Length: 140
Length: 408
Image (cartoon, rainbow over all chains, first blue to last red):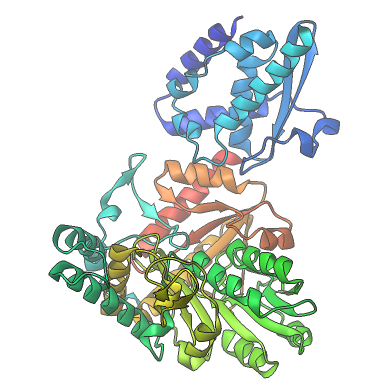
């Protein structure tokens, strides 16, 4: 599936929920399915800066596609990063670079986009895209 | 004494913000240690200033300038009385506690040398650590830490051991922002003076909740921020004993702080203007005064009793929740509860509480050394004010239980 198709699927899933509680319960569930980063990669170098909770992300190429693993010590953060990884993992670096992330707004998590949220999605998205840029350069 | 001494229903009507909803729920504001809310009396004061007598102070001969000057200097006198300073010129307007501390730290550059020591407590806000580290870097003096116990109390024996003729300055908060501990500053000041050291007390967290008398304390410097005292942001004060302020060199140069300027030499203005370069935050200063009027109309002692009641009530309720650990368990505390729940990250709890309309602070509270001491990434901090109620605490407890269920 393309990034856009996956995002549409996530928006569909979240549209089934009437209230914030169900949305957050689902996010917490998603957090539990996060493809976990190997312990050896849980280093300070892989921590996303500026988060109130710790978030580690690792990326590696499988063929021409980028695969992400991650972890966090906060469970809602794990859910957020799980959503991002579901959209970006197993995709070509260039597609990740080009991807629009407006869907976050549509699934009712807009507040996490705010720069005032210490755990803002912004720094996570930026980090994932930076990995994509780095690997794209490598592919070229 | 109980909450019956305060008419909370009436008091709450003074705070327009308490009527708003957050995420569909009535706001419960438990982040008072970060900033207090503003009563309409203070908001009206700011509106009145800009609507009726906005002018630059001290220099103009016209009516508006005189009215503004009188109101601004009147506010200084109100602050003087609130903290029981001997003289109005011992009150310096600053942008807040951080500015006040930096002003003193900068001035002490002239007084310290290699081998001198500055003592700082283990439970300081970063704003009462970093300026002293910078001072030590500039002068070659060393920074020593007064340790604390698991309960979040200063180890006074260790403090006594640290004091020596090398100690030039002791800095400590009156109340810890991260733990709520009320420190034994009277004893701390006396001991420091016996050793020949000056003392600066950070009063950001104490001044809104307990009566402060700088003369009785015999403290050399004391700081406060208006926005924690129901006033606006961007204004605060530094109290300094006249003798110290006279000795301390100016912090910033500019207009207002001079007596005479030629290209060869400038002489400085008298206190307090020597430390007040440039056009100050005039409306903020006047509103600071109005905020103190407001607090006085309720009574600091009554506020202290009522908030203590809230603290005891909330601590008991919270302790009954399985897995809760409270950090800062001193008997002497203001109404601050810093806690964690086993297996739950503070950020997760804070996020879900926000969804339920409850504002708490999560994280390290700008006191990373305190978090490092307990080996935790941060805490959830609920801090109460006199406009909070037991009903709000009940809703908070229910919300914590609900969030805990979701997160575990």
